[in-house]
Image (cartoon, rainbow, N blue to C red; front, side, top):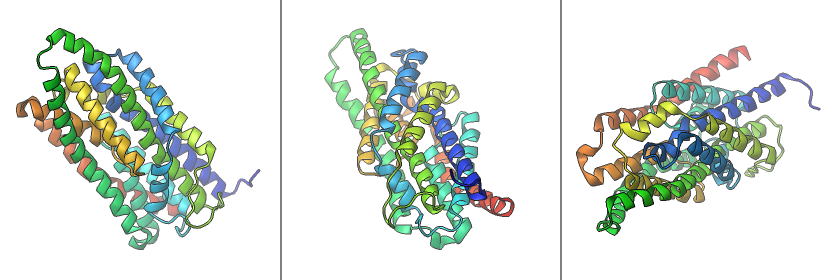
Length: 339
């Protein structure tokens, strides 16, 4: 049993904070996976949350590529000074921002928050030189490109699907797409867990490596099994709580959602998230799903989307990464003085 040194205590705090972030991410982002299916009454809220919890858990245990990107490409865990405090500051900032935006019902990005947090805390600890610019820029590109692609795919998918069912009876079409939404919501929940839970796995492993609690060769980044399991379970438990404030925003305030549009948005976003996860790139599931909804709405008619609310959400997206970075840098300074 390791000695209860200050480093061990900080590591325990990091793990608790990381799993808390994952739990909060679960209830914060539950709405992303199930809002459209609840809005169209394809699923009851209780059933939708059960489905989301199960598939988030399965998705979280399926991949590790994104975890390696988060833990190893923003900063070098083998060279990062005060790595445990850096990770603690990053998590504190990300959790604060998640809770603030959850309270106001704004679907901000947990991904932007944790990525901005890690970058900001690393800069606070060791200056700009602590950032691996090539890896960081690649991550930021994925965060920017993915919602744009999701908007376009959502626009195209609803057009294609509408053509296919153009001559079918309206009530039969609604019934069919409500059934299909069960599948699309399941896939979306799986893809969410596969991408988002890995961010916590990457952060915990970053802390273990930089604190000297995990011995690996430089450049190696293997996720311990207990980290995978704990992150997956924390996200699944958070998902089971649900994020009703954000469900209300995603499920009806952006646009009026019908079964066909809900299925098209879910299908588009799940596809994009899965592709980027396979490429080992983190994306904001919130951004991707919201952009898919916007793309679906814009394809029908521009005034079907409440662009004022969409603009408010966009502003939150834009400021999340820099605000989280500044918060994390400030947290690091405080922690470095008192811990």
